[in-house]
Amino acid sequence: MLLAASAYAMQAQQIEDLELKRLGDWMLVKMEIGLADALPGANRTVVLTPELRSDQNRLSLKPLGIYSRNQWYYYQRIGKKAGESPEEISLRKGKAPAVFNYETMVPYRSWMDGAELFLLRETKGCCGEEKSQLQERLLAVFRDETVVKTRVDTVYIDRPVYIEKESRTRSINGEAFIDFPIGETVIQPSYHANKKELADMRATIESAMANPGWTIRKIWIKGHASPEGPYDKNEALAKGRTEAIRDYVVSLCRLDGSLMSVEYEAENWEGLRSFVEASSLPHRGEILEIIDGDRLPDDKEWMIKSRYPDDWKILLQQCLPYLRRTDYRIDYDIKENN
Image (cartoon, rainbow, N blue to C red; front, side, top):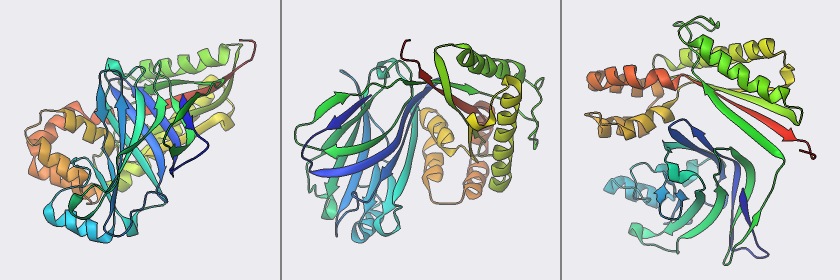
């Protein structure tokens, strides 16, 4: 993990809970971005763009645009976005949260091992005129498929000095596709491929517990449901199923329940968007517009199903089942003599 430091700063941008994680064929980039120092002045727009880089490769992730009132209406009128990307997340200054939970997934490529994650910042004025040079900041380096999770006070500086920070804390990551009968939250180990998925999960946890040089600090579980059916029902199912998996793991592995941390996501729209973006669906562009719109989740699902039923059938078969997954992470400390 590389962080930057300097005795003098031009402008600060706070980043917390930064994560880089490989999930099979996908790369997850997740962070909390403090917006207090990113709010634009009058007739200004600030665009923040994370970017992955290696020696010969570069991939810009979806940008975050924060617009002043006049700029918001200007870009709405011309039908464009200041970040010049249809994926941009657009926020109006007066309605922007203090902290924005940024999350995106992109197809994983081998060059991403050792890639650096930068944050680029650009300020634009009236009619898109650039008002400041693009500033950039090295946030992290992704190595060996491990999780990078830290708090970063990002500082834009003239001459950055990079300090490598060592940590004795490590993480093991995995994902399990534990299936439930429709509408149920009780685990059935013999249902579909659950036996293998649960066995793999148990083996991972028990291998960490059995290592004499490791001390487990936390086991984190996050359940995801797919955007299929009423949101309220999916939220209840995601919560109940994630808690069922937690209880099952605690019982099976004879764990102290206080080691477990549980989160859930009612509907995995981010995963759906990533699949659609990488697909060749006949109405790929139209579906992405619906996903990126500001409608309620149930309205988005209805629009996709009713307008593009053939595309929806493909999503039901090839995408939605794989969005119903459980991610887990084991954080552990290494003893000094190891």
